[in-house]
Image 1 (tube, rainbow, N blue to C red):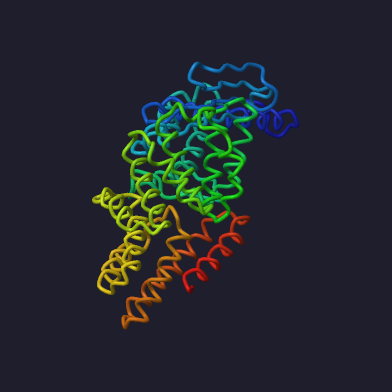
Image 2: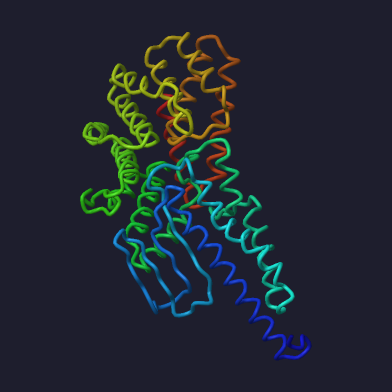
Length: 392
């Protein structure tokens, strides 16, 4: 073992530890890549090292394998769902599993060389880091993602707090030449623009013909594109455009079908076709996951349209049952809650009106806490606009 108290010894040890950290990182990312198909994910890129490509290969399904000029700067696996998120935890456990497999092997051979002993300790530290549930500015540990999915097998809502992460991912995938990965990041960014009340910022993305989009070859992703495109039309005051898209939809995964029914019901509400909105909503009976919150809000809006105190009270009680549920369209949900609260207060039920108003405030606080800082002013502006519309 090199002398720790000489310059060469310090440099050697630092270099060795950096090398080991990179190796552990690559093994972790390789674990994700290997289990991606089992989790219902498509691997879009797997890269080792940064810088100009020494080697790059694109498979027939579009996955890019990239070896950079500086291979000892870490690894990265990027994968997106292509079926459903029912098995998402398998993907997040993949990297952890690779390190768990490594741990006893490194421990058994720790006495062979001091580097093996250091690698064993480092592997355990990195394993603990990924197991801890932490989330900072859109970046999350595998432990946090597993914990976040514990109550629902599908997504927990639109990517409110992930703008910078998605922008970074898009840049990374474009640099590697991963067209599907870059397109999926662009789709999520467009969804984020729609959700935060600035659908005009997504105009450029949706100007591209559907047949030219790489995601159109993947049913799950194509279905998600259809949902976001329909909501973009509705948010841009073109609900008929939304319905035109949705009428030609193909059968798809159950989760995507649920999203499309939500978009259809909201579009019908926007053109005051309550009976058609009810038919779409009826098909959501018994649904679970993030769609449940939005379905309850649509039911509340239908009750308000009927001006029936009994129906509004019943729909309000349904919304209040799970105050922490996510909303795919939080701004529309906020507006509906405000209008229902004002209606209930005006018709002699102030107690339930206060509860609904408090839930609306909680929704705003949670949304602002989750959102990227650059999106918060627009969200607040959209909230003010929805309040004015509600009052009108």
